[in-house]
Length: 505
Image (tube, rainbow, N blue to C red; front, side, top):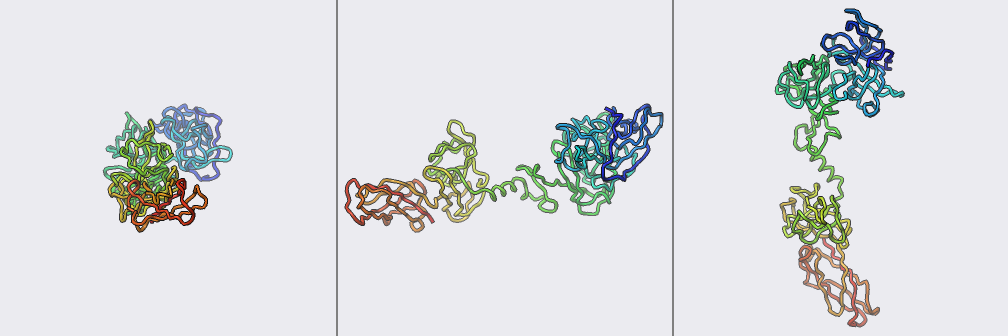
């Protein structure tokens, strides 16, 4: 895919790059402005996409139609160039991370990925141009070891690698290039070793010449000195099944002697890797503590942002938590709905549950993540109910004093206020109101409102009948309402419709 007419323009920054002469492969054509590479077999210069080419080392500054033996080409490297962007899914964009690797599709075009390890590394993304071109920093060191330590003071140089280890690499001299975190490496590519059994071996390495599926690993020239490997050094990993687009920081604080000092790299948490099952590390803050994990963070966020709200409440025992009838109190629950169980026969089962997959009108119940088994709350903990014929917009609290361990401590739930509508024949004198939770004889108040009378001149006052309050949960407690005729006469048809309000605490 060599291009004879490409002229790669200089970027607006970094125009103090390194120039050098390097021998070209005999009979090879090189054109001004095209990306060039060293051939992995002999180190001679070839176009970037020629067969056997290694990673890109720079841009040709002269044209050689057909190189004679030992003929040299002037090459410029360690600077930013404007290159043609790839297309479609292979294109860079403003959202691409600075420092992400760029791969040579042809001698003047770069992709944002290696297309299954078929393209060679060209350089590192430095931003977009207004015309759609891509800024790419092409650096020359660490290819075959033949170049000097140019560019190692660059803000990116030494801090970007293609992939990272996931376990100890046993033999650095015969590194198996295929298989580490799903990648296959070629000569010149960089890898972060962070899991060595001998931690002093950790660091950034360059893959040497590949033969029979193996290659030697040598420390990158820009990461092989104590002045280059310092605490807090950041490394960006661009590819890999596990390490894709991850950042790692060197957390070793002691004075570093390369090859002697143990080097520890810790992953910096991002939105993508702070998952429920993944531990997260903050450099210097809870970086090894089990308290700071994705699970605990997500739970804390759920509790902080959750309004302690359920869709409906069950005031009778649910005998089979694995098969809960989802239609209750005028509501038909769906998967993910939350229900408060307030009156289990086994009182430790009370609490908030989530509905699983609904089938044939039933669903399994599992405890809600924000009030799960083992969570400790205190008496008075409150949950709000937003639906239900009887219980919509009611608030329910734990009426058991002290610390409550969910799933272990027997406890009861009571509504702060609940209203029932019922018919009351005034000529009987009193009526028992059942199926209401009564917190206690001293903390439960009764309000009765007469909303309909047959005889207009009949006035009846209603109050709690003394001695009839028995504390208990829904279904077990009763309270009797006493009627007192204040005016008028009672006829047999003088029935009243009452709203009976029970107010706890």
